[in-house]
Length: 96
Length: 382
Image 1 (spheres, rainbow over the protein chains, first blue to last red):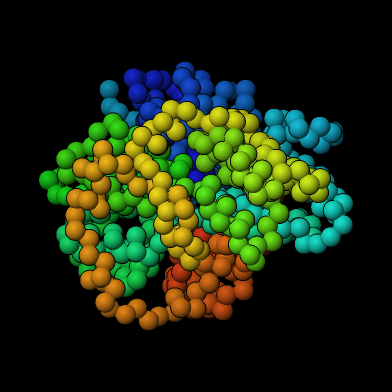
Image 2 (image 1 turned 30 degrees about the horizontal axis):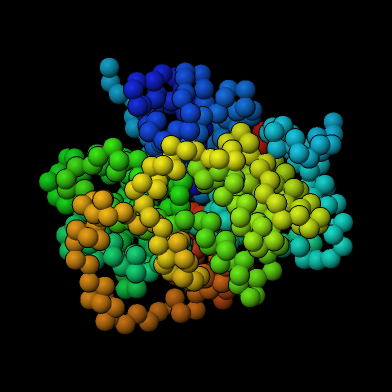
């Protein structure tokens, strides 16, 4: 519940960002992010909200580790389930 | 490559790399721990996600024998007190539609869980977050209550949604908890042997690392903020054990890519404009002054406690007599006992038949230990 999930900002519309989570695009709210974000930045997200901007050069291999966790973890893996839950807490992409 | 030459820069340069690096860091951790010259050296982390990472990657198998890394009260579902579950149960029982995080569904109240009420026809729905709860509330005229659990990291989302405005039929039953005060409780426990704390990175992303400075000074205990990747945890522990060894009650931030000293100001403003801290019980642990977050008066209209009559005695007059009397979740969360020290663990209590909250939540120590065991598994990508 406190793990959070990182994703890459694709575009921004007002208070909402479209964020790419390992190939899946979702809507994340920007109400409480710590500083302004722009496309190409990464954000750490928790229960549907971006809580921290992470500059692309700081993301390191964090994304790779999450990706691997999601790809290789068993269905019932607790940590992977929490990450999937975090992605589930974001909204699906809005239809144009 | 000697990544450990400059410890102060280690956190800034951490990158997820080959398992060999983890082994190198584990050797350093062992060396630093043994240089203290006594055992055990006991440190506590306060985050279920830390325990998940430690158990999932089998890090305890590479921790030195002299180092005890104990999970404290870091599972928000586990520390939600029985009466708080009872309040949600009673709301559902009186026909209110209750939205909850999935982890909370099967946590036993004094008589029943939300899953029990749901089985009896109560309207209880699992959601991933408060945003989804608000969406569902918009689709109905029914009274809807979001049972809001979680630490400050999650409470800021609740605050932001309330500030943005919610439908008239929507209110919040806050069981949110605030971590810094419970660290003081653990530090003050007479039987405690904790010599330092690992603070959770994403909660600290909100509060900032500075929030631990007064604590470190007052309790003469070092605090190290760290992240959730295996190398983050090893680096955090190396730093923490060094501070213990050197007798330095300081705060170190080993997770600068997510945490600053000041923290996330907009999130703090949202949090404290909606919530006020009050004292209250944490399940099985203690009364924690300022440990519970409740809605401020100006948000009374979205506070389920003020919107509905919730008569807990209606439930409590029915005597609960079950295995929970033997459950030692409280001692486990206080770091006094380990899951394997509980007579119920793996016997009468398992994830299919949980007796205590620690076996229910994905962040509960018992559940995590039950799933992952304790073997080393750093085989990511190899």
